[in-house]
Length: 233
Image 1 (tube, rainbow, N blue to C red):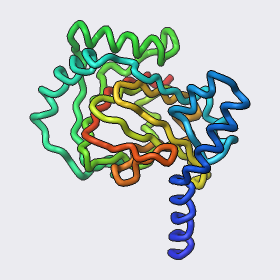
Image 2: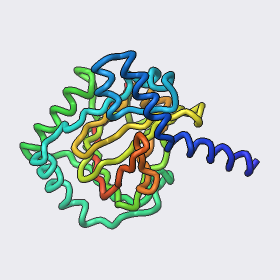
Image 3: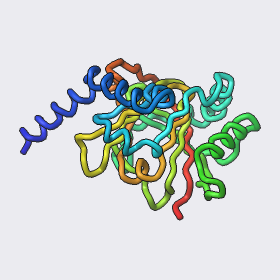
Image 4: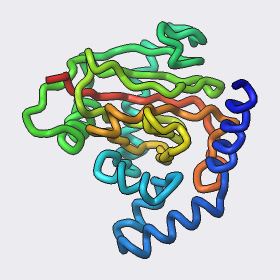
């Protein structure tokens, strides 16, 4: 059994970092879908065209959603609380390593304006939102393991702003771990996971040594995510 697991991991690792596979997926998708899909291919890649079709409409990355000035405003507000904490390498459900976190209810005028924009594009109108905003600070050596956020506390949509660093989010169907989709979360982007991508796929942030997208290394530095969620209904 151990040998089978090892072989499976080796095959999976090769497919994750195969630049030819990425290129073929991107080009075939772009040819079929046109200019809009060409833009999408800048941040979305997967193990097969079928996988990309499954998640399309359930995942979204909006590049440069905030400006440098807005990033600085968010950073200044959250850094005061974060720097009082130490990075932890043991999480209560073993999902995160090398992190510190906090929650905020009150924001300054600039940051509140940013969060209103996030809510407007990410959540259905009238959707009840989880009150505190979750702020997760991931050390350069930290990473987030595959997991699905608790359905007890979170609803159908998760939306997160990426501060300070690019990173790669990988989502994998719960029942078929050989398939995968990678999202390129560039610095100052907004990612959104909805419905099936939220409930039927695990999501993770790759550690620095595994952080590749389309065959290209994506260096991981300290990363702060500002995460909004809606309530379960």
